[in-house]
Image (cartoon, rainbow, N blue to C red):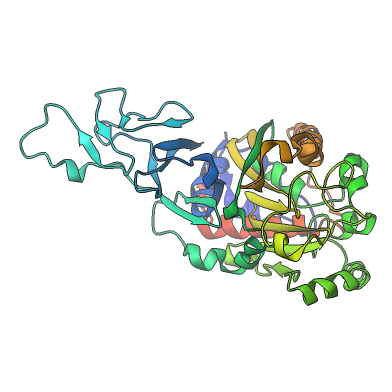
Length: 420
């Protein structure tokens, strides 16, 4: 590939249009943004119920990195790079499992679930096993959700990052939930194409009949991609329309205010809101009825017919109904491919015969399959030499916000370097 002047490329972006083609197609840009953007984020990767017992582990693999997330004998969850400290072999080869010892398949160096080196054969007398444990990866847990940060330096404060979102998580208490179902959707498209589709609901009416049938029409148009994605006048009118509902929630002590990151220069894109599903529906299911028992504080409050959206960054979102939650994880695979994983959560005390998986996953499963198709079709067009950045609609303001965040991140991290 010929040299690309990243400074000129970022400066060529026109506000209110999609990105220049190279941002979606350059493998070198991809490598740099993984290193300088993706790895610097606090990434939501899973739920603690995936590894309930000491020795339970799973791998989080991205780009050239593989991370072991494991529950220790002391019940503490830790994260380690899946790299033997002897000569660098991968230690765990299976995606998940249970291990009393993590044994390197190359020379049989053995590590315990706390990452300590326990056995290394034929080493010199001055060899100190305490200095050769597995290398730690930054890990944090909040309300049962597992976060990793793969930066090479000191990560940004997790406490500062998560603080404004905790009240919304506390409402649903995902720490008191368990995984009911998970599914991966392989998407043949650059991660930015995948994410920006999630930033707008301009496509929802023509592309998502199921999603649009569940939700009230004004919600789909104005709040489908969150507050600020539609014109201010229409947003104000919608908020006035649902005011009786929000006032009732205020009386019941249920958080419903919107949290919106306003400065893309901060490097953060956090968002949270709670709005009514509408159309008389109690939950985001095919018949609008609950698919499981109430979870979180709604056991005390009773149902309210609302849904909470929490966006941690462009790579992870959650949606919580009264009876279940669904976690969206967007993981870049390479320049041309992205993995989208959905994890559905229910109250940890509910028995399998008390929730209906098919009705629970229906809307988001159908919608994500539809999204996969339209994203891939979109990306095929971007790959054409005829592609030029297109003009965005008035209901794609969140896409412009995403572009500004992304370009600010590129400028901050790459600092106008030439890449090829």
